Length: 536
Ligand SMILES: Cc1cc2nc3c(=O)[nH]c(=O)nc-3n(C[C@H](O)[C@H](O)[C@H](O)COP(=O)(O)O)c2cc1C
Image 1 (cartoon, rainbow, N blue to C red):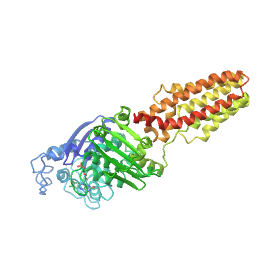
Image 2 (cartoon, rainbow, N blue to C red):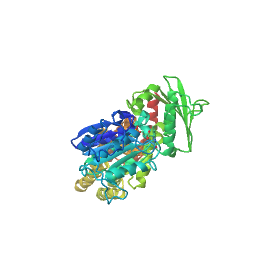
Image 3 (tube, helix red, strand yellow):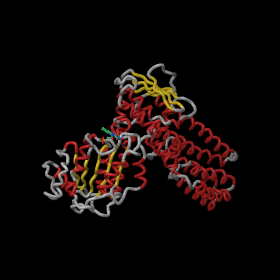
């Protein structure tokens, strides 16, 4: 496929729209062989159309102006796909791109197309198989009401419904490195659109993602104001760390407010500057002085924040490398993405509206079959085995809406296996301890895999699967999973001996008390360990 990208932004390759258009081209290239040419309109030698109509009468198909336009028209004819990329300028394309568009007159014939509603000219060449994609960013918070004249123009010269378009508001955010997480996510959707486009058509889901605003209006406007690095009151250039703090504060998602104001102190240790962000019910405030008592304080060199912003490291990795310390309440850090990850919140509310909420895991699916087996089979092998098999089936039914993990499947399979074995050989005093041992081994051995068992379930409380990328979350879960595993391996040993002894009646009591104690410990450890790690 021959692709021609026409980038009309005067900023050339620094253009926001060009970033999206390039991601789209990358996607196309992923799925097909491509010959690629690109025009940076700002650097072309093209003069405005003279309106002489010579290209229609005196020199049909040829313009009288001798500049680079002749080669450009050849490239347009060569392309199977033309990508029109530009930033919105006064509700239309930038002026030099308009020159290029006007200068396409030699590509059409002078005659009138009678069927056309408001007048049109037939093409001089066969353009019927040529595809077009229009990609543009604009500066306001929304594309709505901004693209009327662009749509009219392209509808006329490309044909209504005969081209794809990607319009993205808040375009200037593509140049803010601190926001690259969100803008990179958007570029990912543009790449996907390219892949899908060349394989048939862009899916509704991808279109939906591309139509979703980068940030909510309020967040965008606060960030856009902060991004200039200028004091609103005085117009003076402000301290970089203050600008950074304001931009971070702008990301605050007030729906995560938990009934109490939070004072987050940002202590930039290498430059000796300190600012506070007060997270309130109905917004936030950034303090330069008159500081309040902090809830959470992050001590970090500003250079580390810059590295995080530039994508050289992540906040989570920086913490693991002990590049920053956290003092005070660690709760904010555990739920950082809830407070400052407005994209996720946006998407979550969007997907729940569309009825496509992400399925959650549930640890009860894993635990219920084991509990049923340990309690029921210990009372009566025969009835207990049947009850356990029934519980496996019932669990699958009851939790059909939840996402199943490999450990849920493994648990049901193991319990059905143990129950059948118990029905066949009736040696509860061996089979029950062996079942505890298997349970303990499943937990311990999962620590050798990438995701320890508890992480699959506790991620529900920490922003779902994104928690799996948090090394501290994973380390905490690895320790907990291992401790639970050991507990059950040991349980198998004492259960074996207790079941042979006169104290066998106490087995169930001991085996229930210990996990309760362990559950209390787990709750405490999940908060204490990350806080302890970050403080030292
Ligand atoms: C002269 C000028 C006119 C603009 N007109 C509009 C406009 O009408 N509507 C809008 O939302 N943004 C407008 N913007 C903002 C740009 O569309 C926005 O910065 C865009 O992301 C630039 O894209 P680019 O980097 O690809 O050139 C304008 C910017 C400039 C410099």
